[in-house]
Amino acid sequence: QVQLVESGGGSVQPGESLRLSCTASTILFKLYNVGWYRQAPGKQREMVATMTEVGRADYTDSVKGRFTISRDNAKNTVYLQMNNLKPGDTGLYYCNVVLGGTDSWGQGTQVTVSS
Image (cartoon, rainbow, N blue to C red):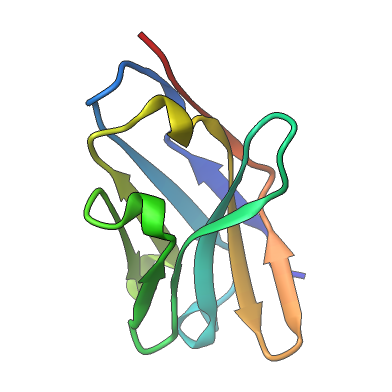
């Protein structure tokens, strides 16, 4: 089981930005597919952004053009840059890493967007 430590959440106003970070406790990080998911109150967890081990990114439609996922394999870290945040982006954001049939989840970091 890979340990994941997330940071960077907070409370912001609409239009502002945040950057989430997730650092993994594995030297094989570069082999993992990584991703960010979120769960709003009363809703199911949904995929926000994913990135394969070779750097191919995918986003849910509602964040395209505003969010950017990236990774730094030297630091075992995946990032989520979130710009022009909207109230609908509010939720608990989870980091996820997958290798083969095994995946691990972080503890979640809260993002609240409100005026």
